[in-house]
Image (tube, rainbow, N blue to C red):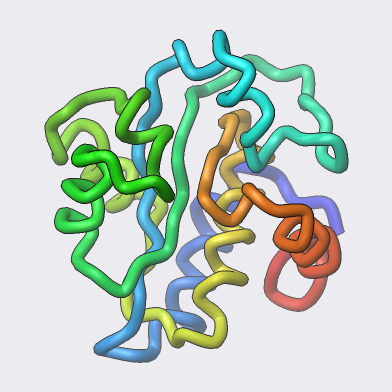
Amino acid sequence: MVMDPVVRLTTYLHGMREKHQVDPQGAKVYVARLDPAIVRFDEGLSTRRFPNDDFPELGTDIKGFVFVEATRKTVKKRFRQHLGGHPDGWPIHRFSHSKFFKPCVEDMTHRYGFTNLDPETCKDVEAWLSFALYQAGYWVWGPSSQTEEHRATDRALLGTGDFV
């Protein structure tokens, strides 16, 4: 199913939130802006989640560079851990758009993020949101992109069920 990227990140996003934000104690999926300098480094290019070998560059204007991650902590606490050098969030530590939470994370997370996610669907929602942002013209990083196993899971998931 082909879906317009604007619809995917507005109407469809709202439906995904209604369906999957069901656990008051659940996880969150947040989005952080990254500095464009990340693409000048081999490590940055080799660890992007989208585009990648299976999902090529779309030939559209790049809207920005983002990091998407699921967490059980508060988003602000997780962001601080990344700024402090936590290895899972090295793109934020080295390439955050801002060292301040609001411009780097809060705005994008409010617009696109999820809260109260069931732990069983949290990683699927993280993959879907990463894909949706890619389809809308963002280049996306996230810790799940680090292994071929996660990339294979993404290939199998995306485009099926709710995850179109």
